[in-house]
Structures are given as C-alpha cells and as structure tokens.
Image: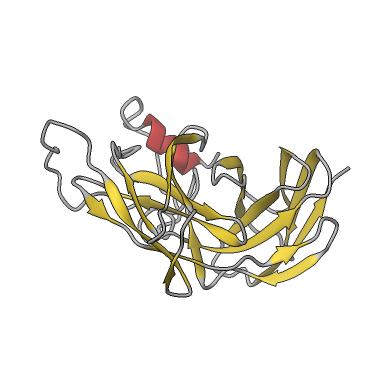
Length: 240
C-alpha cells in the first residue's frame, strides 16, 4: 500500500504523517463544505445507466467497502436503466462512497462519489476490450478512461487502461505490468460482480497481481500509471 494511503487511514492517530509523496492527481478530493450532515437517514444515490446513449437494463450498481473492495450493497437497473441505492455512506471524509457499475460485455465503471444528500449519478458503460490468457500486450498508458480503486481515483478519477480477460479454467491468475525504464504503477483486478479482487501499488515496475479465478468468468484488469513521464507498458497474463 502506498505511504500516502496509509496516511489517510492514520491521520487521526498519527498527525505527523508526511503525505508529501502523494501524487496530487490521485488524491481523493476533500468536500467543499465542512458542515456536518444533518442527523437522520443516510442519503440515497440514483440515476440511469446507459451504453451508447441507450438505457441499459440488468446492470449491477454496487457500493464497495473501502477496506477490501467487497460488496456492501447492490441493486440491478430496471428496464429503463434506472437504479436507486439507499443508505449511501462516504467511506472517508476524503474519498466519498466507492461505487461500481458492471454488466457482462462492458467495462466495469468504478468511481468515488462524495454524498451529503440524495444525489443523482448517471453512468455510461463502454464495451470491453478482450485479451486472452498468455497474450502479451504492448499498450500506451490510459488516456480516455478514468477509474477508482482502494488507493486511487478520488476527485474525477485516475486515468487508467482497462482490459477484460475471460479465463478458460480455474486457477491462480498472474498479471505482470512492466515498463522501460522501470516506473511506478497501480493495478486492480475486478471480479465479474464489480467487487475488487486485488489491488496493488508498485513503487517500481514490474508490478505483479495474483488472484484466484473461476473458469468461464470474465475479470477486468485496470492499470494506472503514476509517473507522468511514463508513455507505455507491457502486460502479461498467465494461468499456471
């Protein structure tokens, strides 16, 4: 885990924690108002999920825990693409609620939403870019997609590169991200239900992620570059 993320967890216990190494573009945004929310029920989050501008039925909208990225609550969009989640709570004063939106055939969208009252959030999903186990991918760093995970993605999200991988058999999936010269990366593997299977912050590449996977299911790999001078990377996957 990155030192600055430890600082976020430890801020009330260790006021002297130095977060000077925190990449400013990845810092979760603090709320613009310091006023405490009024007592009463937690706010709700609602909106419409679309793909290519059309409402999407059957998408899963979930709230994730901040400690492990597990599902805390979820719902499924109706025929008009609408959803509503009650009892939405910010996971910290800095990062808001961690939300994922998933649907087979589309990239899982993850983001933080700072909620102080009932709020609307519309999501546009994009079709997946599929890769195969064992395929070596040479890729530019992320420029058009933005995502969030346990250690990044506050504010408007972190620029990321996403891949979808359907595994042919059960086993231990291994993902390696490397670059020349070596550079820092963050990475996440998302399960099909939109929960976070594993998150890794590597101070220098190669970055390695491992996760137990099940045959026939599709997992999403998110790669975030930390060094603004990094231009490309190599991604390898294996299932020993």
